Image (cartoon, rainbow, N blue to C red):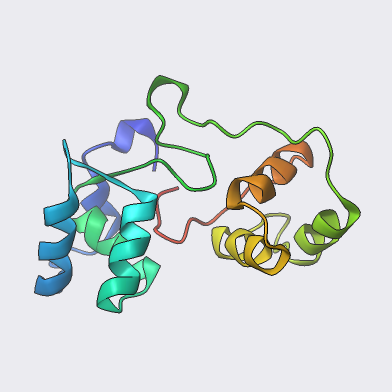
Length: 144
């Protein structure tokens, strides 16, 4: 969604879309100034047993902004994204990213998986993608 879509996230979903009550209450309890961080959304999903996609959809339907993407791509105030292109990309990281591409893009889920396999920070994978001019899409929470 673009900045113009802010506060209209629910429109991404069919009219009448519902949110599980337990998930709704947990999300609402963690919201500050109509914002919830990507990390907090992940914690909620794991804690209650929902997928990130289900959690992201609930956040959209509740019309809450997702902030502080764990890949550094969005939600950081005026600068929007904080990730910077890596100065170097190791051959191993480059190979993992390249082999996981779909239609020239790396999914957020794949970026997280690569980070876990290589035991590196998620943002390091994103920084490598920035250096390689690879877009990360789609977001597991549906944010972009």
